[in-house]
Image 1 (cartoon, one colour):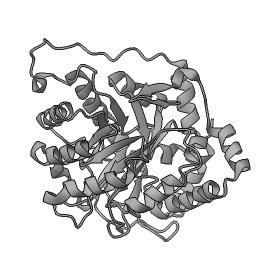
Image 2 (image 1 turned 180 degrees about the horizontal axis):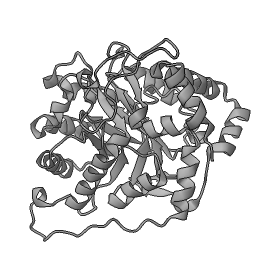
Image 3 (image 1 turned 60 degrees about the vertical axis):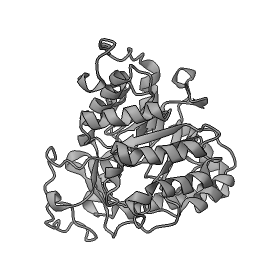
Length: 382
């Protein structure tokens, strides 16, 4: 069956007209924001009829929250919460906004978002562009209703020294803690200089300590990790998660790896049907999302699940396009799923299609052989 979005509109926009992916995304967000702001009930009802699939078998109860289904929109798409009232009508079971920083920041120079159709992937180097925590807080206060949980992804400003990172995360959390249902500490984006070094235990510990001291209402607090970490580094984060009573892990962010890409050069911009510029992808900064990330993110999910004996909830994200991709991550141990790049490639019909498949499927329990009781975490193989 032809998918008009995937098979006609997407190739026309990004291969034929060579539109700027960020401009297209922002145009979509402006349209969704208008629908949200005007409460265009006719449009919202039409979206619900087209893209919502409800089945009580899909509901997930976690952290005292009820998720109507396990499929959420990942952080990075609606950074500023512009379309919070519309995402439920597009079928999502939850949405994560951000990454947000204490003060507004413009992010990295453009162009900074590229589609890699040969790989069904994207390269981004956005750099936490956002309107700041205060603007997001005001938008959340004005929200008419909250039919799905809202997560908030917290980051460090580019100009903040690494040694002062905890203060940045804490400042945003103080402004937003009453307005989010769960919070994610983003220390794994490759697009803010030095940020990934905050995944090291000695740097992450003071951030988590500061947040949990402030977290008097015990909001669920998670950490989002990179797929490029070695197993011992993941072990260290899992120990901190236990020590600081974290609610879970988001696995994973984008990857810096380029070795498995078919794309060798970045596509050109702005001149329809003109030859692409020759820009070697190996020389380009940024993180890769989409299909090339699928296998590694699933490996990390499985490793975390086995290492914690399934006691630490995992939000699985990375390379979900099909029902098989979603089931793979659930069977590896994910409690919830997030999509972004797959949704961009497949279109809004992807959500109800996945949900119908999940409702019909009865995923077996994750294939976990628990290690002997005293086996060090680092010796458990993923």
